[in-house]
Image 1: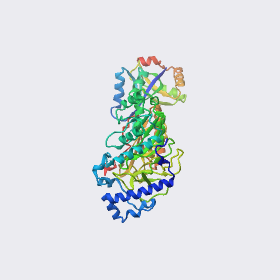
Image 2: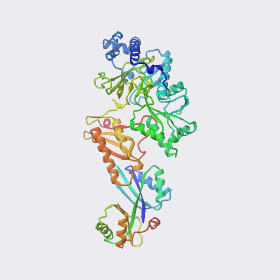
Image 3: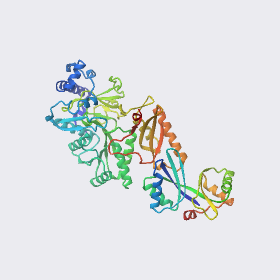
Image 4: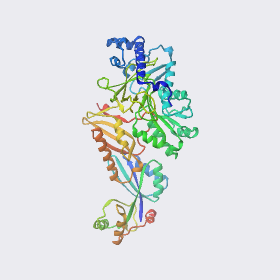
Length: 433
Length: 143
């Protein structure tokens, strides 16, 4: 099913709509947001300079730092009395970033989430358990309102207390799970420990998001739960969840292009890249009232595919997020993404799926250590087998990363499982400087 | 004749060995023989206990990575040259030893070693032919 007819507009119609809305938002921020007025003046640009979609490249970027420097309300385009909701990012790496919604923004948001929910195959007959934290984080409320819009029965379980989550699934006949992919895996493990086969809980669809994950993790989730695992994308600065999501074909994430204008740029130079190239995703919000953002640097690495999808939607699709420009590690001058490590580990029988990357510096040299769990079924009791396994992991990682890591096998379930975003990297180099 | 050996994968972290022993103690399982092989990162603890099935079960339930392997117990004279004699018999038949370790207690005047080789059957055959006693499974668990 398709929620909104705009999802099937001809490409030229979408582009026409985007240009019309782009011109409008540029004029609006120029008139309403002093920060943008100053930026336009600094780069000698006028709203009237935007005549085609390609002219967007003339506009300066907006970054997370800009949001922080204007904490809390500096970038809002409406007075406070027009706002009906505030959300904020966790702020683990500095000041939180604050976002505000008008009544219309909330309406738009619910509608956008309704699209991604419906395209994943969820209907009003589903019972949906939301295991995202409710609160300042946009995940819980975003999915909640979108699912209610669709008419699904929402169980706002929030995150944590995993045994209770499983009990709720059993008692309420939950058919759809909303969580981070790593938490979904953790719930499956806990269920198995309790003697409950996750497949017998009867979940049909998983709506997973809020952290990068791999194709291998999808297979694992589908196998363990017996559900269709779909990916969706969003971030609080842009609106929250609902920016893009997968349809049942699982072949890229359809972007709601009538509300978001997506570009791919070279993260180092800021140059726009040709269609199909991999680079950093930059998004301009086209319809937001409370906090419109021009060319927001998402720091997420992906590519865009404009070819038609078999599902009938004409909207362009994002490739799975392959990493973030800011979780890129530079080890002995080589760029390394945690997602690469995850891909390699997922192909090796006997280890995983959890892992931890520990980076340290000894004698002025970077050291890369990968901790990975020994799968309990693969333990033979033979020393030799463990050595062979370590050597295999090491050589496969080396050929992909171009850096020789130290591999440390750890006990099954000794690495941290979380209800939120999994922590995969510990960089001790900063402490040593 | 085969004795069930329990192997446990242990990270080199303080308290891991202690907690294995505590779990066994709480389940009234007695350790007969043990050995630990280790690197800087991990170790393998090998145990002969009086109730191997139960030990395997309870350790698994407590989240330990456990496996079972067949080994044999060999009785050797508790005198200089006792072990050498046994090993020479195996060497002559080109039976390669993966590992061996000594038993905690002794049976009257003799020492016991736990032996792991690829082909347990031929090892037992050649040893018994050469007058080396291989105690029965029940005998080992009862010690």
